[in-house]
Length: 189
Ligand code: ADP
Image (cartoon, rainbow, N blue to C red; front, side):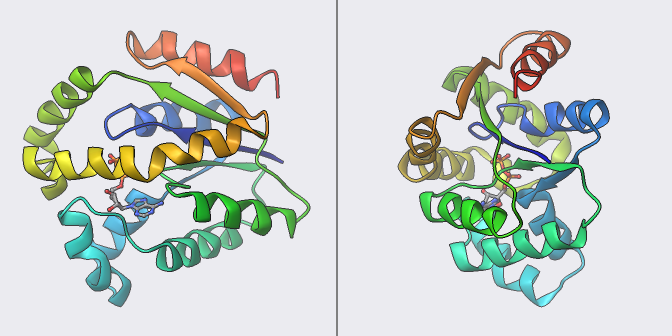
């Protein structure tokens, strides 16, 4: 199995690159943000539970997020591997993911952080807001998401760095060039 974590702040391009990576490596893409949005859209009880938190740019509690993610992995028994996008976002999520995969005789092979500066992130999300209709893309909510990222999510980086699994890729520039840089890293796993 090849299991990757694509890591980066809101607007770093994780979704765009994940789409290209799943085609190239035949992996299953699991985006916790997309899963939550699907629950909200179909008004499931999970969706009702998390919609306000998400609209406000706050993180969903670990217990809810982890249960949803594990269920999604278990739905894909034939998968050759996974790209985790937007998960783990906290250290407890990262620890739980390691335990969960170990129970299946699998592991995270590598974590790639897309590096994009704050100015470019703000510009990209302002642009996306015009078409996405995501309530959490508005400027005020975006500030909250970025602060959640810097308060909670960045701590996931040293967790993986200490395991020797972290690589950084420049996330600014042409989509194809960034994709090639990602493939160069992944082909070494
Ligand atoms: P972004 O574009 O900010 O990377 P996502 O689409 O990945 O956003 O996620 C949108 C929102 O869903 C987050 O702001 C958060 O509220 C919730 N969410 C997604 N993944 C997680 C997670 N792993 N833990 C907690 N909350 C999450």
